[in-house]
Image (cartoon, rainbow, N blue to C red; front, side):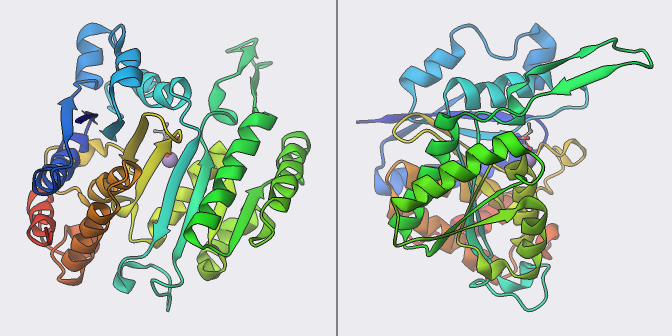
Length: 351
Ligand code: IPM
Ligand code: MN
């Protein structure tokens, strides 16, 4: 049985890094007969500027009904300053496909890449689960007396019991399944009293169902400090949408930069979306300089989601080998372009 994968390269460096990721995916798919079929979707800024449409009618339902996963590059284009198409497509899929788990591993693959002094791959090895369907991202709020000196702007931060409970439970389940020792919930409940109270109560209740797993709470300001000072204290971190957005960029830096980090937007058992954490980096677009590793590790994460664990592992090992050999793009200290760095990984795939 074939499984269809929607490929949305997007804007900027998206098409280049997705091309590198697809070469790896195609090679693995052919060699291991995974039965994946990749279907290209041209949803991007060019198309939006040409037609005024970000997602064609029926597009979201097509993905929901006919695809196993979405493999996405990046969105963002200086010609669309309000990021309307990006919001429609990326946030649109997160909300409409109810992709409530944003899975962002922080794993240092080579000590040389870590900006922290004296930290090893064992120290920097944890997972962040970011709630992905509510919080400050719901776009609720409004303004009053806009453009006057009396202007008021309100931006709501929404937490629901259902939304908070399912992401916290997912974090504990993940810890249990993967043998991780602890789950840390991070928020700012000393200031955000109402939402924070819901998060903390839910965390304590769910934790009772997992007596074998340690749990602790940390304010998000302290979390950013400890991620830098003592990353080894974390196994699994769970947090809300906005804090998760912020701390996962820091997490990416601990692994060697935004070019290294992978992410999954997941609804267990349903079509889920996989994208590198980095943005579209318009100024590097088409220059063959972007690091393809984030996109390639994202491809591996997608295979893992689809149940192809051995193949995901093979890809990660090929990435590690290429980094060890210094066959990388400039951001990691190598001297290869996007294409050649992708090729170096392809060469190391032990199929
Ligand atoms: C991310 C990005 C997005 C977010 C932007 C592009 C809307 O920063 O995936 O981390 O804020 O979620
Ligand atoms: Mn972000």
